[in-house]
Length: 258
Image (cartoon, rainbow, N blue to C red; front, side, top):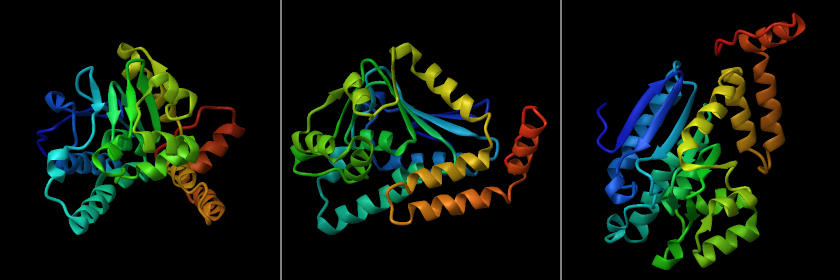
């Protein structure tokens, strides 16, 4: 597929997805959402891809929000349908994906942009990044998982503050509250994401997928049951047998994603 709003590069088992709407501060419109769905779905199903880094074009914005012009004609029913469909197509797809996703937040991550970063498994921010959920200034609330995922990451108190005031926070503040994993200089953000992802790609791919599923279930009523089930499923994998054997033989394992 030829993308109009994304730049895609596959290199050394990493898929790089760059939202390429720099003149619009990489805002998420319908077409970009559709392309993100295709790019992520393909990456998750492609055995040659081990993980994904997502970022925004330019230095100003990761994603500065949704395209608000597309909200103008929505009513209660159509807005609910839009939120449900887009959550499923992109935000839930990313969060529940079988491969690690790192968001390289290179500038403003606001509204739907921050929600996209929240859906990723790890977030790395540049020192110039600013993050926020300003929807209440439009008479709205976050509709792509922001109220849920932000609360899980930073706690309900900080989530209430950020969402109800609509204030942006700096990268350093985001690090202090656990919203991002690292803060680096702008020119170092992709290299840091690559280093972290390459370390993960040395591990067993099916174990990574199982770990993502179990971590996502944290706090759910059946969270422990899901962890137990994923743990048990690992013993049906060839990689698990290889990992245990390699450990006992004091050698590096040769994981094949089987």
